[in-house]
Length: 361
Ligand SMILES: Cc1ncc(COP(=O)(O)O)c(C=O)c1O
Figure 1 (cartoon, protein in one colour):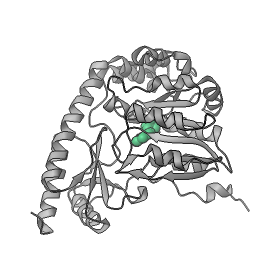
Figure 2 (spheres, rainbow, N blue to C red):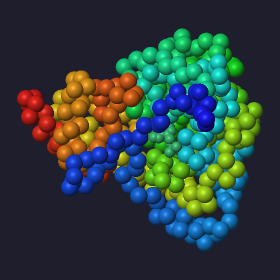
Figure 3 (cartoon, helix red, strand yellow):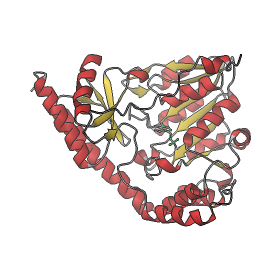
C-alpha cells in the first residue's frame, strides 16, 4: 500500500477561486488580484527575445535580475534571492526554519498561503486576532510561545487590504525574540510605498526577511517572479531549498525589463488607485462596507454569509466572479480585484440592482 506523509494527507489542497459563471456569459474574473493592465511592452519584448535561447537552462543566479532589483530598490544585491513567485520563497523559508513541533504565527485574516506552507512543513499554524481587519502588533506579540519560529505579516494584507505603518512593524520586530524570524510579505508594497515607510533596512538586523513580487504592480503574475531580501544566515538555508533553475529565462528577462520601466509600474499603480477610489465610492453609495485598501483589490463586507451567497449568485449570472472569503474566516465578505473601469462599473451596477431587489434603496 502507498501512503502519503501524514501531515500532507491531513492538508486540504490550496483553494483557488471557483470561476464558474452562468453559461453564455463571458467570465469577468475579479478574483485573483491580477493586474488589469498588460505588462510593460519592454517586458513582453524581452521575454520574446529570450525565447531564442530557450534550449538553454536559465541563469541559476538571476544575475541581471538581481542587479536590476538592487539598482531600482537601492538594496544590497548580495541579500537578494529570487523565486518562482514569492510563494516559492515563502514555502522554502518555512520549510527551512519550521518543522514538526514548531509554530508559525500569523494574524487572523492573513494570506492563506502562510498556512499552506506551514502545514506542508509539518509545523503548526497559529493565528492571532486582528483589530478592525488590521494586523494587531499586540495580539501577535501576545501569541508568541517558545515554539514560535516565524511570524508572517503580509503588509499590506491580503484579503484585508489594510496595512500597518513602519513604526508598528518596528515595534513588532523589537518585541519578538531574536530567534524568531519576522517575514514581511510586501507583495502589494508598490501600492503602498511612501517616504519613510520602507522596511528593507530591517533585514540588516539578521532576523527579518522582506519579500516582494513582480506579480502585482509589474503585471507579471503569469511569469512567476518574486524576490526577497534575506540576511545571509537565513538566505543561505533558503537557497538550498529553491529549485536550481527556478525562474525561466523568459521570465527573468521580462522581470528585468519591467523593473527598469519605472514609468509603466508607476502608471499602473496610479491608475489602479484611481479606479479603486471610484469603485469604493460607488460601493459606499450602495451602503456596502469597504475597508480602506492599500492594494489592487477591495474587501466588500455584507450583512452576513447568506447575503454574500445571494450577491455572488447575481454577480455570477452576469459573469462576474469575486473571491468568496469563507476560507479566510470572513464569510460575510467578497474580495474584488480592481479591474478595468468597465468591469468595476458593471460590478457596481449589478450590486446596485441586487440591493434594490433585496429591498434596500
Ligand atoms: C500577500 C501575498 N503574498 C504573496 C502572493 C503570491 O505572489 P506571487 O505571485 O509572487 O507568488 C500573493 C498573491 O496573491 C499575495 O496576495
